[in-house]
Length: 415
Image 1: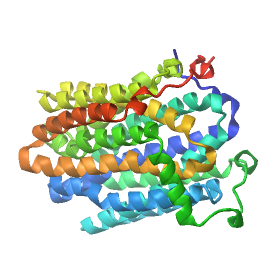
Image 2 (image 1 turned 90 degrees about the vertical axis):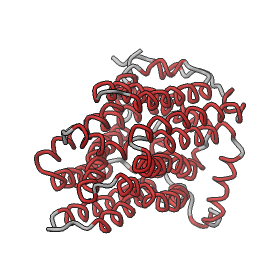
Image 3 (image 1 turned 30 degrees about the vertical axis):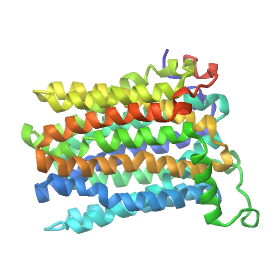
């Protein structure tokens, strides 16, 4: 069945939030390609490109937990605006650095670290606000819409980045991303406060550290949640190949190829996401997450052995489609099992699982590629990922067996 767009038609506040993140997400994906490309051009080192992941890891963990706690204590709209504004300032810094005669590698690392720290406040605020604006019966549809939104950005963003890099270099890419943040801030500012509601007054809340502890204890006590986090981290830490795309593009001899490689995963995800209405009828969500993540791993293994760029793009499309399915069911499990009073804190933990995996994966891939070659770094990582995902399903039987009653509204075909 087709994608259910009912929440966009019925809910103006959600529609504005969706538009803001669609626009800024497109720009973010442009920079996502531009930053490693610029680093590779400056250093010609896979390891230094992979080091970006390590630089971003500490801000993700620290700010993700803090941002999650704050999202349950302060106005989520204001927190989202503040984080988007800080991210825009970081892009202005990357743009200024790119305009110098000799761009600083250290400045790139520093600005990317701050940018990642800002996302630690952005993601929990966004997740908590999204759940607040949606009705429970819309959760599956909202999860699919959010995945498709991100996937469209991941298809169009890298392709656009390739064109911008080929014509105007990283300056054009960073300028575009900066402008998308300004547009996103406009849409967020138009979300009515009445649709968001209020948070508890400071005197009604425990200490911030107590809030953090409560969120961590809740996640630890729910194997179905822990399973989603572990599968995501394993899948990305061992099989995420993006740090190697600049080297693959350089070997192919075409600047645009770096955008094609990243877009290929997103095209596969978009293709299956546009026909995601069936996800509302699936009840074995834990099993769906594990199987989809295993297919992702097999797609990456195949990429490592692909004899041509065209076949490599096909492998990435299959892997991206599988990751999309896994993401939809992870998001549905989160929305079904987490109360709104804990949504910000758990969104912080979700963000850590969602982002630390790729960051670790990029670092792993970069160093493995310099030591053993690009192909080996890809297929060995995919094989380890497959084993780890299957092991997680066996180790957490409650996660594997998690099921939910079907949400009929999520499967409605939009008119």
